[in-house]
Each structure stands twice: as C-alpha cells, then as structure tokens.
Figure 1: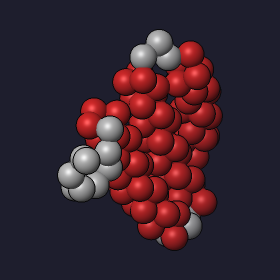
Figure 2: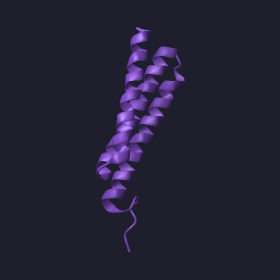
Figure 3: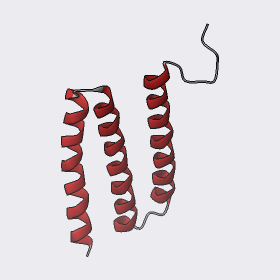
Figure 4: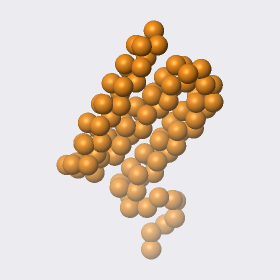
Length: 92
C-alpha cells in the first residue's frame, strides 16, 4: 500500500510540471491563474499523502492551511484581474 501511495505522489508531482508549463506559457491570464491553482491543489494532495505515508499528523494541519491560502490567493488574483483593485475602496 505504501508503494502505491508513493507512486501516486510521484505521478502528481510529474503532472504538476505540466501545470507549471501551462502557467508559464498562458495564453491568457485566466489560464495562468487556473494552472497555478491546480498546482497548489496537487501540492496539497501530496502533503496529505506524505502525512499518511510517514504518519506525521502535523502535515495534515500544514495541508489545511496551504489549501486555505491557495483559495484566498486565487480569489484575490481573480478579483484583481476582474476589477483592477483588491479591497472595497472606491476608485477615484
């Protein structure tokens, strides 16, 4: 079972390289944001797999915080692209 989990983690890391390539070449900013979000999600899953493989419970906490951070950054980047501002301030 551990071998299978290592294989899945390795496969996810290889697939993350393809997502990083997509984030680099685009063609649109939406593609880049989505590719970055996918890389973050794959990293979260790899952290959970490492927690299960190694028996390190603290990695689950790290994965939860990383997932929340990934979500907030994606929402902030999308809002910045769509409106041109991050907060609720009124444009002058």
